[in-house]
Structure formats: structure tokens, C-alpha cells
Length: 453
Image 1 (cartoon, rainbow, N blue to C red):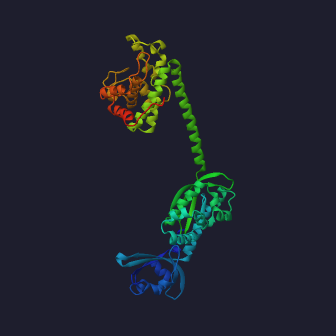
Image 2 (image 1 turned 90 degrees about the vertical axis):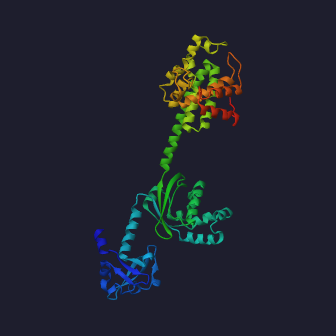
Image 3 (image 1 turned 45 degrees about the vertical axis):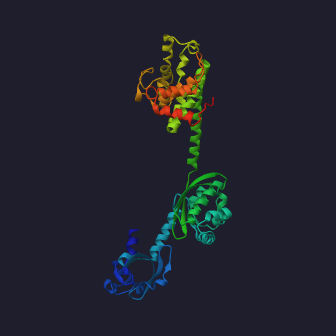
């Protein structure tokens, strides 16, 4: 390739706005036969490259003829770069052997690419767009609402020039003619909507596209493909296709696996909760309601979803340690004595030890262990204070107190929601987290929170 470029090196001329040659390079001397001093400040480009009106527009520049010093004419293509601020223009010149080389390598690249590639001519589609623009202007959306069949006519104007071998290998059964004539039959309804939106971008002049679309292959299989569109001329594009079907199938398998694991996880949680229900039906009922209120408070505070979900689980299991407490104590109709109260106070640590070897989110264990801790250190089992208590446990602590006060207990009737909210408001900042208390009060007073069970 190096020898090739040395033999066909491009050359250039610098000319002013009147077309007078101001400079040329040594390659121009070789190609044209002129000496630099023969053209610099003496020749006009029309004497060398012909009249500008005779230049033929190409996708890559212009086609014209170079008149050599001996009168011989050779076919060339040129590019024209204007620098109006400096009153000059640069013209690059290549002969058609270079163009042929570039085309052959371009064609070879497409044919040998491991990726499916389609070359498409959009000239008929652009002509159709010009007709639509005369009718609808820039309001093509409204035009397509009135005349939805136009999208199929637009697609039908796309001409498929070349499809490489990799495409045929990947999508066995496609025929060149079938693809040209029935392209829209290979898209799902959602895929057609995607294609429509991308064609609207083309309508606005954008030929650099990248999108994912659903298609139906020749054997009827749903596929998901990434489409990359690159212009290779004024009205031609290359379309690269990357099949994402396997990745999407793996994602779906992963989603199913995660769903199964999540279901199993929830079954474990529900089983643990139901074990408590057999021991003490009140505690199980209480845990579910505390979980519901804790979940709502966590959302109201603005915690991320994973934290909110973990807090719901922790609240659902927060009293699991009571399974080790005798039923006679849990269901005692009167006030507990000091010994019985000390036994009850063991349930956070008991619950923690029961769950610590299960792979729960950390918030679950914090809640089980710390939901009876208070900001002023008056709680149990460790007498933690303020920031030593995890936020998740501070949330459940408030929900726990509110639910307990508004519910019937074996030894007393319910106090009601007003008394419960008064209790947490009175102890806001001393026993209970102020932000959590405020969120809880908002839920009941402003957002009409109600328990579902």
C-alpha cells in the first residue's frame, strides 16, 4: 500500500478567490508537467482544471480533467476547500486510479466484514420526502397521523444496493429481492414504530443513526438487533447490524432466575413470619402492620428502593426473637413483672442470632437488633445513642410504637392514632428521630395513610 500511495500521491493547488494559482506542491509538478514558476501567480485554474461549470459533482468531490503542460488531459477528481477569511482556496487533486483503489478496498471491506452490512440508496426516499415537505413542511408527524400508510411507502422507497455474506450467514433465508420488496414485513409492530421514529430523524437530515429494533427473521424468530447507520455519500448509507438476541435472551433468563430467587427469598421471609404467627398471632399481625408503616415512612423520607425494600423485610421480622419467649409471658393479660420484662428484652438479640447467618441486607439485622434502642440511650439491648442507631432501626422504632399504641393488647385497649402521634411528637429528638417522626405524622395527617390489614 505504501508503494501505491507513493505512486499516486495526491497533489494540491492554492488559488485566490479569482482563481489565480498562488502555490502548488512538487506532486503537482510531477502530475501536470508544469514547473512551479510556470503556474505560480501566472495560471488560472480554468486553464489547468477547466471551467468550474464543467465540473461534475460526485459524492466525494468533483470530476474534471487536468490539462498537462504538453496538452494531454487526464481524468481526475478534486476536493475544494474555501478559506474566505484569507481570500484563498485549496484544491486537492487525485487521479481515478486512486478512486478505483479506494472503491475496491471499500467494497472489499464490506464484503469481508464479520458483521452483517447492508448498503442502501436513499435517493428515491429523499425524493419522496421532498414531495411530502411541499405538503406538510416540517409537520410530518401530523401528516403521518392523517396518512399512516405513508410510512410503508417511505420504507418501500429504500433501495438495497448490496448485502454482504455475513448478513446472509446470520439471517439464512433472506433473499435480496424479498428484502427490497417486503422489508416492512420483517418488523414487529414495535419495530415498525422504532423504524418510523428513526426515519423521522432522516427526514430532518440526520443520517448518523444508532438504535435497537425488533425484527422477525425468515423462520419467524423474534430478534433484537442494534442498527448503526453511517452516510457514505449524499444519499447512500451503510447499515451495520449487531444481533443482540442472545444477550436479550440471557437477560430474560437472568430476570427469570432473579424472580425465582426473589420468590424463594420472600417465601423464607413469609415462613419465618408465619412461624411467629403459630407462636403468637398478635405479634405476627403486629409485624405485618409495622412493615407496612415502615415501608411508607422510608419512601416518604426519600430513601432508595433497595433500602425501602430492606426496611420492609426487617420490619416484617423485627420481633422474630419473641419465638423464644414463653407464650404465657407474651399473652399475659396483666402487667409484666421485672423478671418477665427482662426476658422480653432478650428478643432483639435472640432474633439477631437467629438471622445473622442468613444473607439478608444489613438493614434487616440492624432493625431486628436495634428497633428498641432510643436516641437518649434509654433503649435496649445495648443502650445505643443517636447516630449509633442505624436509620433503618430508627424508622421501625417509630412505626413499632405507633402500631402498638393503636392496637389492642392483652392487657389494655387501643389508645388511638391521635395519642400515638402525640407520643412520638412529644419524644421527637429525645427518643425518636425527628425526620422519621415528621414523615410519620405527614403520612397520617396529610396523606391519609391507612393500614391495609
